[in-house]
Length: 389
Image (cartoon, rainbow, N blue to C red; front, side, top):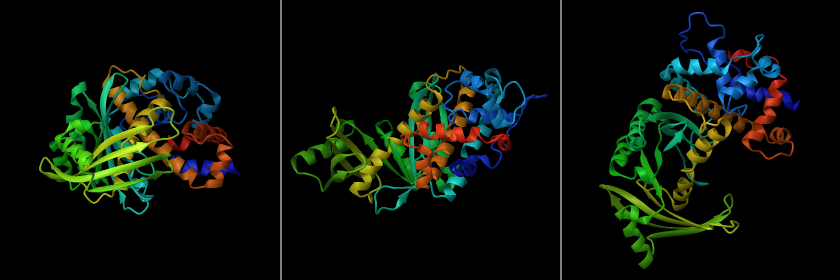
């Protein structure tokens, strides 16, 4: 009974309709349908396949071929995957990555409240990374699901700021009403140009960084707090993160924009090392409470923990090497779409408490554990992926 309910939720997540409609196939006499090839690539994070070779190996097994209703020797080979990724049109893959926005928005998964009583916010996080021999900047929308909606290549390491600003401008046009209301950024983007772009879109920014010496506005606040205290102060205990926190705030201006400047200090008694943590937060959104400012600063880590590290863990993107950046970014966008769908299925499962407990069957509820159990269910469903292709 549980297996049937789990399968139903998986179908609700992504198995109920073809995924890769509208992609252009440039091949003259294809032996394998393009949608089959792309679905196999899309399934790699789901099956924790960390290379095209491992996908090739899995594609030869009877259990995997049954998912596609495949009668051939294999679903597709690693060389076929590499060739398709080389000529696939990037604009079509980007459109596919964005195609799940309406489904997520219908369930209100793209907004997040920063406090128990606060309003839900549309948050946007930008950050750079280095994967598979390529520098990149990604934009994710953290909510009930962390959705990486856009990723762009940096030709060189020092282009991160310029690419990030271009993504901010594109987000306003492409995402429309779903564009971020509050941008969560790190020290690299702490400048007047970034603030001007956000404020020009009617959005606000929040910067989190380590050292007060980074800008005069925080150095002045540090002197104020040391000798006179903050204009507003607060403290509390974070049950989820098991830490005691204290914040001090003052108001100032930066680049002609009014900002609130906050110093956050946290103490983690259960840690063996680095129990004390501190950072500075500067935001143009003046209505944020101290509790919301602190939570927003923690949300900044979503792109690192739930996007970059997770996709590397599930699909080995740090080790994937394509000299051709087009191949790599086509594959990465497919992986990002798959990861967003995995998050969506995870939300559906956790909403059914007893079913989720039966699925886990005593194991820890990590992504890899949960989806290893779902894979067992799918292997029992004949031609589970056939409808997708």
